[in-house]
Length: 378
Ligand code: HEM
Image (tube, rainbow, N blue to C red):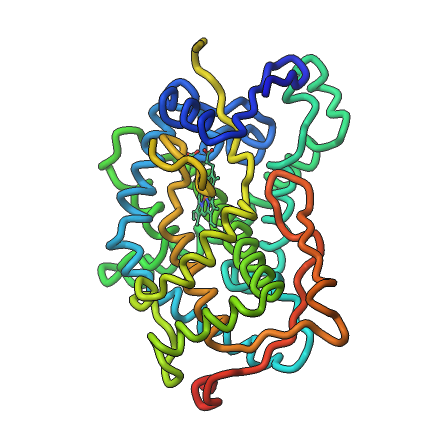
C-alpha cells in the first residue's frame, strides 16, 4: 500500500510476501531508520540502537547486544535475577488472592521493579516514540513544534539524564568499593566496563551508554507485560485452554515445585498458546519504521512479532524466556476468575490505538492459589 505522509512517500508491507521483499530480499537497502525527533532528543542524537542509522555505531551496538548482553551464556548467568523477580511477583499476587487485581500494573513491576518515577519516564518515552510528530514528516513546519511534542521530549531528556547519572554513579560507587573483587552484576555494569575499556572498534561514549540503556529498559518492559496480559486475557476468554495448559503443567512439573526455565522446552502446549497470542496481538504490529537507503524497484514471514532481517529485535531471546516463564508461573500458581458478575462474553478484547497494541481496558482478574500453600511462603 502506497501512502504519502507529509513530504515523504510511505509503503506499508501488509502481507507475508511483501514482508519477504522488505525484510529479506531487500533487507540491506531498508536497514536504516527515518530521522525522527524522538531519536534526536530522547535517544542522545541517535546514540541508541533502535533509532540509529545503519552504520558503524549501530553495528557495534548490535554486536554488544549479541555478544555481551544477550548471548546464551550471559542470559544463563542472569537467570538467578529472573528467578528472584518472578518469585517476588508471584508472592505479591498471592498476597492479593481473592481481590480484583489489575494484572498489567503488576506485570510492569515485574520487568521494571518498583521505581515509580522510572515507570513514568518509560510511559512518556513510549508515548513520545509512538507519536506522529508533524515536524518529522513536514520538515519546514518543525520549528513551530505545533503539537508541543519537542518540548516534552526535551523535558524527558533532562529526566533521562538525571536517571542515568544516578544509575551510573551507583554502579561506579559499588565498583570502587569492591575494588579487584568486582564482577559485573548486570547490563549497566557490562556497558560501563566496555565504555571504560580499550577493546572496541568504535569508542563507546557515555552518551552511547545513555542511549543504549533506554533501548534495554523500554524494549524489555512494556513489550513483555503487554504480551503476557494478552495471553491471560485470551485464556480467560476461552477457559478450556486454561484447563489444558494446567493439565500439561501438572503432568510435566507436578504440584509440589515451581516451574523453572529448564522445564519450558517440555511445555509445547504453553508455547503454542504464547505464539498464537503473539500472532493475534503483535505488540508492535508495524515494527519500527524502516527507511530505504537507495532506490529499489523464505522462511515463514507470517509470524513476525520481533521483525526479521538486520533490524530484527536483538532482545527476542530474553523476551521469549520472560514471557514463557511468566505465563507458566501465573497458570501454575493461580486459578483465574473474572471479578463479580462479569461474564466471559463481557470481557472486551479491544486494542488501544498507537504504535504498540496493548489492551484498551486493562484486564482485571481475581486469583486463587492452586498449589499447596507452603509453596507460596518464603
Ligand atoms: C515481547 C518482547 C519483545 C517484542 C515483541 C519485541 C519486538 C520488537 C520489534 C517488532 C522490533 C522492531 C523490528 C524492526 O524494526 O524490524 C524490535 C526492535 C528492538 N528491540 Fe525488541 N521486542 C521485545 C523485547 C525486547 C527486549 C527484551 C529488548 C531488550 C532488553 C528489546 C530491544 C530491542 C531493540 C534495541 C530493538 C532495535 C533493533 C534495531 O533497530 O537494530 N526488545 N523489537
